[in-house]
Every structure is written in structure tokens, then in C-alpha cells.
Image (cartoon, rainbow, N blue to C red):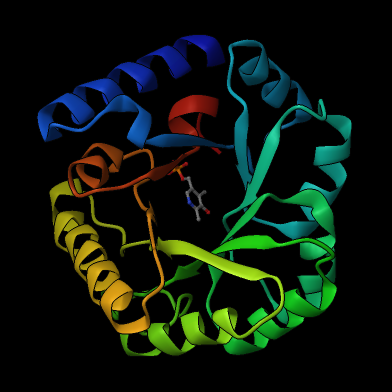
Length: 223
Ligand SMILES: *Cc1c(COP(=O)(O)O)cnc(C)c1O
């Protein structure tokens, strides 16, 4: 299958999931995750109309993005260490999905020259990866960003533990939705965006309220 064909299939799956969930297609934005894939693959997806791309490593993005058309939009979706904050905040990315510490918020705020939209990555399951803050820490991170000069929190992101049965991820997606509602109340900060769902579980994430889905292998092939 071509990247164009894969994008069409993913598009049909997104539309079907939106329909099942009674949501409008426009409420869900597809982030095409091009990590490990060459510029040619990005250009092929761009030629098929894809504008929004995601990378998970700052260094790879730093070498790839300048070789791509300036009309494309890039989000950083992978774990970010404070020592890479300067590059991450240098204008490569329109949004960073993986902010999970106050230290990182301070570092990004120090280096960005313009308002920088971010999502707070939360480890809602408490299992698996150490990435993402604990649900109980999220309010403090939002307050820290609200007190910063240029870091704007637009919502939350999560990566549930991998399970072969994507239905098992549903509870984590719905928990992120509930946490978002609670944090909006608690902090008075609008949190419209929920970044959740990858190739094998994005339909379930859409049913549970995702506004960004991050899809790599189902568009670009296995890594
Ligand atoms: C790689 C990656 C994805 C995409 O994963 P696929 O299973 O290939 O769709 C999504 N989110 C993050 C944070 C990733 O690192």
C-alpha cells in the first residue's frame, strides 16, 4: 500500500469512528507520525494533503524539518528532556505534546521567543512508562504554565500501556477525559485538546473524546 492509500484508509477509519461517537470529523486532527522515516515519506504524505506531522525526537526533527516544505506543521510528541528545551523551543514545533515537569516548563519558557502551545502528558494508568506526570501533579503543572510568560497549556496527552487488545485502552482514554474536566474546574484553564490514540487504538480514543490522534505505522508502514 502507498502512503496515499494508507492515509485514505486512516481517513475512512477516523470518519467512521466520529460517526459512531456522534462527533464531527472536524473535531479530530490527525498527526502523521514520521519518526524514523525519511523526508521522502513526509513529502509523499504532504502530496496527499497531509499538513500536520509529529516527531518524537528533537534531534531527528531538527535535521528533518528544514528539508521539508515550510507549509507543513510539526508537533513534538515524544519525551523531552530539559537539556533539549532550547532546540525544542526554537521555532521547530507549533505544539509540544509531552510536557511533564515544572522544570521543563521553566526551560521552555526561558527559550521560546513566542507563545508556545503545549499539552501536559499524564500517566493516567500509573503503569508502564515513567513518562508523563502523575494525575495528582497535573494541576501544579498547569498553574506553573499559567504563571509563565509564554507557555500556554491547551490540554492533556497520554500514552496508555500497550495491550494487544485495544479495548483495554478505553478506560485510560476515558480517565484522561474525566481528569481534563476536573482540571478545567480546579484551575479555571480551558483544556480543549486531548491527544490520545495511536495506530492500533485511535478509533477507541476518538470514541472517548480525542482531538489529536497520533498515527505512525498505519500511515508510513512498520518501523
Ligand atoms: C511513535 C509514536 C506514535 C505513533 O505510533 P504508531 O503505533 O506507529 O501509530 C504516537 N505517539 C507517540 C508519542 C509516539 O512516540
